[in-house]
Image (cartoon, rainbow, N blue to C red; front, side):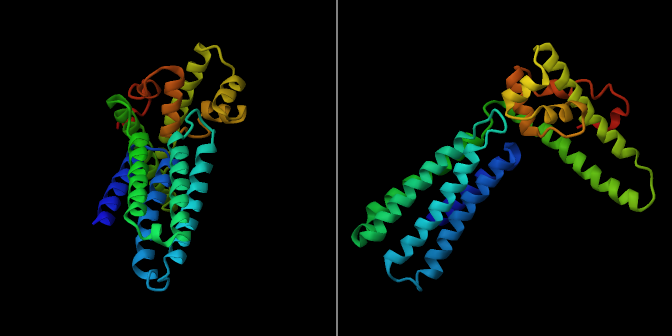
Length: 259
């Protein structure tokens, strides 16, 4: 029963990550969901191979340690202003789970006790709660803005695939040129923001943990700015996400910019 409850909650967390999260949040949600499924598979099938609770719990300790290491690496990634605090919290929770399982491995009475199961269930609920809090948009404007930008980039990706097919068929590449204008427009809006703030490319790069070359490529439209990165920039400059898309409807080939 708990397996289906935790799996359902973890699946909901994964949906939150896909809709509003960055790639790291999607990866984190996938690890959480995968760990729940794998742990139960081990319990059901490998429990017969390892009837000794000591051996079985040591396997769980290894899984918890690997997850803690992965979440810790996500937390340490400071490429953008977002510090991924949710990943730091999950790393601590996984270490706590490893400690509980380690205690159960060397104390059979504790490993088979209700206290051991209760401690693990509490930690699992905490992990899911941390993800829900960390992945849920803080406001309706944030939710709408992130979905809007993700939809825009999804259309871009679909158009790129269409462009490849058109190229193979010997058709014009007009669509790809129109898509490129979106990246250039957003880059120009970032450049305008930076100029109004009196920051150089090097200074902005330092604030964001990037290089000046990356900022230059963003502003020129050479590299695309991700939806989650746009949200960080919007918070940094105290503007709405809509700021970056303002003017697209009035730009040339406006039909391709509608969302």
